[in-house]
Image 1 (spheres, rainbow, N blue to C red):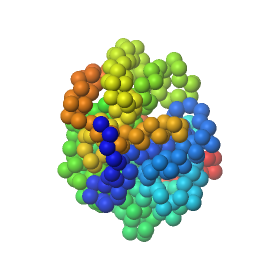
Image 2: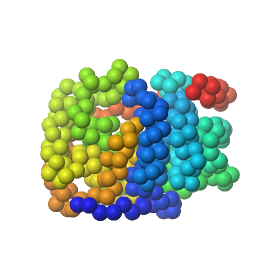
Image 3: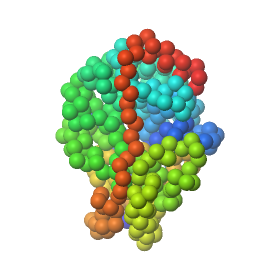
Length: 347
C-alpha cells in the first residue's frame, strides 16, 4: 500500500507541488481559539516535511492569516508555492463577510496581500468567490494584468460553476480550481470536476477531511468551542450526525486493517481520483501535518478503493454542507477600498 510521493502539476500550468498542501484558514478563524506560536510551527514543520503549497486568503482573520503565513515562511520563500485569495471581505477576525471583486479593486487587493505576506509575488492568486454583480471576464481580466505586471504567476478560482469556469478560462489561463471535495462531499464530481478537466485546470480540494470529521475523532458539535463555525454544519446534527458516525466507524475499521488512519485513507482516496488533484487539508497541529503528509505515499489498489466505496459511498453520508453565502453589495469601489484598509489596520 506504500509508495513514494511524486510532485504533481496543477493542470497544464507547469506549477509543480507536493501532492498534499496545507490550508491555513483554521489558524485564524472559524474553528475556535488558536495558538499563533503553534500555527507558525505547524507551517514551518510542513515545509520541513516537503510540503510546498501553502494556502491562505485576504479574508481569513480579516488579514491576520496572511500576516501569520508571511511570518512563517520568512527566510524560506523559495521553498513555498504561495497561494492566496481575494474577493471575500471581512472587517473583523470572526465577523461577517461579503463578496466584492470589482476589477478596479483587484490590484489594490493584491498589493495589500503582498504587503501582509511580505513577499514580492504570489504564486497562485485565486478569485475566492464570483461577485454576483460583476461579469467574471472583468474580474479575471484584471487578475491577468497582475500576471503581466509580475505580481502574480498563476491564476485560480474558487467555488465556481462550470459555465463561469469556462468564461474565466476563455479570458485568461486558469491553473487551479478550489472546491470543497472529500469522501464526505462529492457533488463536484457531477459537473465541476469534468468541466475543469476538459479545460486542463488543476483541482485543489479544500476541506478534504470533511472539516475534521474524517479524521476519525468522533466530532460532535457539543464538543466544539462556542466560536467554532462547524456548529452551523447540518451534517453534524441529529439524524445526519448519527448516520455519518456509523459510516465513519466503518472507515475507522478499514483504516485499522490497512495500518493507516481515517484521515490518511480519506486523503489517499482523493489523491487516487486523479493525478491533477492536490488537496489542502487544514490543521494547526504539527502532529496532524505529519499524519496527513503520509497519505501522499499511500497507493490504494482497486481492491482497496472498492472496499472503501462499500463502506463510505456517496449515498452513505447524510446532510447538506454548510456553505458561505455571498452577500450582494451596492457599495461603491471607494467604500470597498476603505473596508480593505480598515481590515489591514485591525489585523
